[in-house]
Image (cartoon, rainbow, N blue to C red; front, side, top):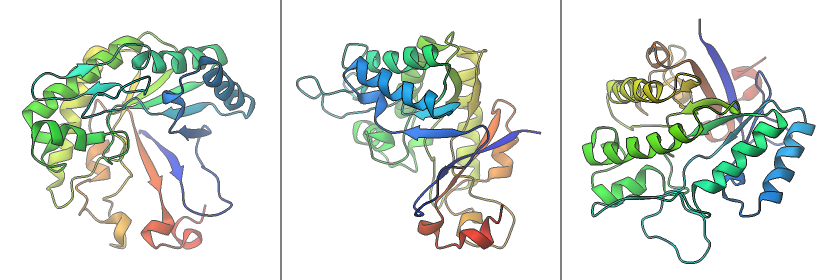
Length: 256
């Protein structure tokens, strides 16, 4: 039996993230340019008793920014770049080092479905297609795997890593659920070939379940939670809960 981690409960006033064992998210710590700020955040995370901290492991751009702006990867059909410099993956180095010092475990997503910090759309702009064809676009997947290799290999021996997340909230609207299933199966196998020390999860919202047929249980976003959880190289599943966005009543939908 695999663990299901409830990693996000958002958009409701006065309700905090619920999970076992006590995770939280930070969308910005990976892009802080001052190591003292990173240490301060991680110190506060540890003092709050949080055991697992989910931080972005991606920052994709379609044009290399000037100055000190943080970016991790520039996908390009004419030659992609992975930034290992002071305003690149060295920022993530600082996060991992701070987590090691404080005994905090990290979940690190490797690409975003959404356009924040580039995401799959950065690959689409570089290699064509759409976010729905991203999963089967050979050029996009070649570059994605190159980036995954760079990040996973960099931290595969770190005790701070709790798990690698293949994507933040992957969707494929209108697609057969086989598209994401086959991609997750192949990609999780690839990650496991790079790192035998840490767990791997898909990072989906948990949609696609047999129940009352309301939106969170439908398969129209291209995910089948039960089928995906059966992939042997995925170690656990996640639910991301947005009851306000999904127009469901939390008390009746999730009475626990």
